[in-house]
Amino acid sequence: MTKPARSSRASARIIPLRKGTTLEMVRLACPDAAQAQRISESFGLAIQDSDGIRDLHERLIIETADALKDGLSERAMQIHLQRIVGAYVGSAHGAGQFYTRAVTEARDATAKLANDCRDEDLDGPVGFDSQAQRKREFAADMGVQSHALRMAAEGAVAAYEKVVGEAWKPFERPADNTTDTVGRKAAKAQMSAFD
Picture: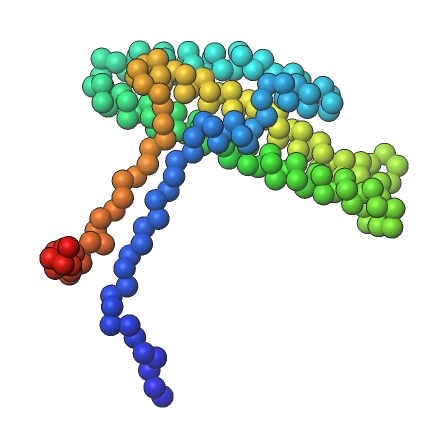
């Protein structure tokens, strides 16, 4: 048996940079207050106090920072709050993505229900909801939940700015330059001679 030809080049290790989740991404994925209210009213769900959720989480982060201020340096406080706010934003974004998928599934199921030729999508037995109805109700629940998490994230981001003095942005790992080996550095230096 012959062995497959191997490349003489060492395989480079590629580390993809993971972009952090921003508050703007959360706002695109989660319903705003007006949409959350429409969902709540349409499905008979409790209407949330959006401003109250936001304000409560803002106060929570500010009071936490106030309690820690004597034990943490300015930079340590910034790093700590960066992580906490990042967790709020990441949680809201995950809920928003889940909500978006639930809405897509509800729309698909409802569209199938409109087709009279499909027996499997017809209403269930008397007293039971159809599959499409259950999916719509599930999407509504996810919409209200993701809105609540969005408001918590917005409150946390506002608190970060008040405590740290600058706008919150997600942590992004710097580029890993370990793939720049001695051989590559030498090749760069040699090639620069031609410039």
